[in-house]
Every structure is written in structure tokens, then in C-alpha cells.
Image (cartoon, rainbow, N blue to C red; front, side):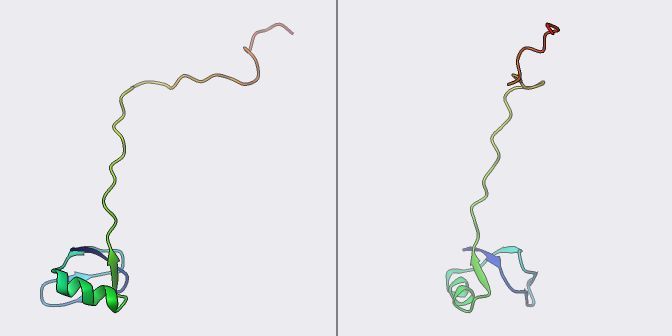
Length: 69
């Protein structure tokens, strides 16, 4: 189970700081969450792929910028 650490934790196989994510077995994950040392890690959300290259179309809200003045 992937957890995100709230507190630092080190052992013979790892050295974790707050904010680090690590995959623990279910029993250990349950103990760490119950003790308040870790929370479930948020699933990684990927940003949508950019489909259009170049400058964005921008429309002014102040008129057409003509020299009628």
C-alpha cells in the first residue's frame, strides 16, 4: 500500500522523510496510519497533454483597439 509519510522513519531498508512516499505491506501500512506517521498517498494525477502549439487566441474586452479616436 502506497503511503505518504507525515513523520520521518528509518530502518535497515529505507530512510524516509516527511512527504516521501513508500510502498508498505498492508499490515505495516495499517500500523503506520493508526500511529499517525503516514496517510494514504494521493494517486498521481497527470496534467492533460497540450494539443495546440503557439499563442493562445486572446480577445480584448476593451474594444477592437482601432485608431478611431
